[in-house]
Amino acid sequence: MRFKKAVFTVNLLLLFALSGCSSTGAKNDLVNYAKSDRDYLALKQTIVNKLADTTSFDRILNIYPLSSFYDPKSDIEPAGKLLSEQYMQDGNYSACLQVADKMLSVNYTSLTAHFATSECARLSGDLSRSQFHNWVLDNFIEAIWRTGDGQSAQTAFMINSSSDLYAFIQLHQLVAVGQDLVYLQQIPIQKIRIQTPETNRSFTWYFNVTPQFRRGLIDQIESR
Image: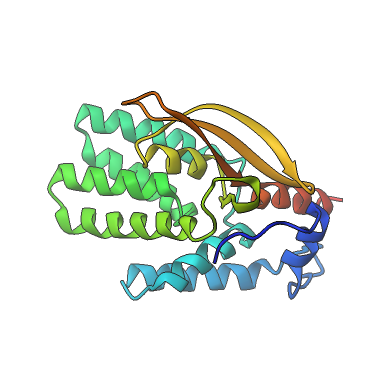
């Protein structure tokens, strides 16, 4: 389903996202994290069991930002990316896989983690593990493409984190050379200038980064 033209403000998006979610009372939670966590873990297990279809991948990308596992400010993925790249360069594939497992334990939708696992498993000779995580990675990339075409703010890709945004670009063999945060009727859109290394041709991709802003609003309200 393509991301259609936004017609709500960020606050209305927040209310819409929270519809059907209940407060737990003691913690003054706006989101029913217990339910989101159960749904997220059930979908994760479906993928692990190789029973997932396109709907499974679409749903887990939507549910993960409403789970207690979601922390767009965490440095686990950025640090894990640097470590896994260093371990790959050093030929320490076991350490690389340990780092990737840590990333996956907090975010099974991480493009960076699945790529690192696939590559380090391949380089270590574990082709079955490599092929599995490559399959998962391909399905997550396709799920992001189903949210839009990235050609305009109205058809922006829906993305859950800055890590996934830049991983998505890099996995298409492209380079981000500039960025700007714009708003479509108060919906936050990252406008990324892209360049193809071979030809230096430049173009722009747009990413809807509502999940990160929404979590920030939720955290602010719950902390009061």
